[in-house]
Amino acid sequence: MITWLGFAWTVFAAATVAALSTTLRFMFPNVLFEPKTSFKIGSPDTYELGKVDTRWEDKYGVWIIRSPEGIYALSTVCTHLGCKPSWMDSEQKFKCPCHGSGFYKSGINFEGPAPRPLERFSISLADDGQILVDKSKKFQYEKGEWSNPLSLLAV
Image (cartoon, rainbow, N blue to C red; front, side):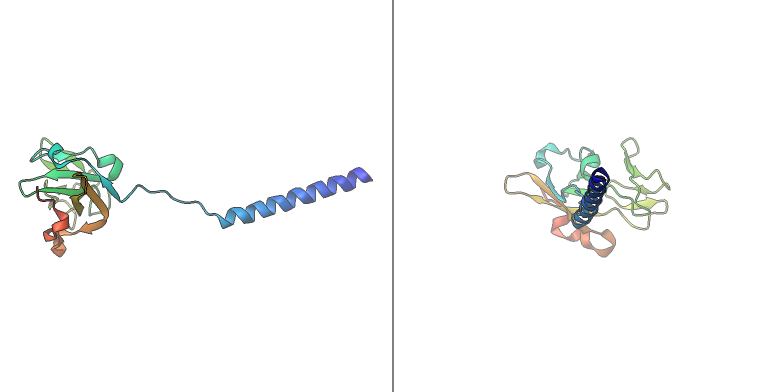
C-alpha cells in the first residue's frame, strides 16, 4: 500500500515539474540571432578600381565595387524574386540564375524580368579610416536615392 502511494506521488511530482517547465519555456521564446547590419570591410585602398569585390558576398550579402566616382555597396538580392545573382567576370555583369535577370556592374538592370536595379547600402568612412557598410539603410535608383551621399563613398 505504501509503495503504491509513493509511486503515485512520484508520478504526480513528475507531471507537475513537466507542466511547470513547459510553462517556463513558453516565457522564454527562441531568439533569432542575425548578422550585424553594420560592419567594417577594410580600408578603401584595398579595393581595385573597376573591380567587383566578392569577399563579403556570403558573409554579409554585399558586393563592393570601386568605380571612378567612388566605392559603393550593392545588395546580393535580385529585385525580381529575391534570388542571389552571380558575378560573371568574363561578361562583366551580374546574372540571376533563377529567371535570367541581368545587371550591369553599377547595379542597373538590363535584361530579364527584374523590375528595378539592385539596391545600394549606406557606405561611409569610420573614425579609424575603414569602410563602414550599414545594411539598415538602403538606397533605390528608381527613387533617385543613389544621389544621396551615403550611397557612394567618394575616395
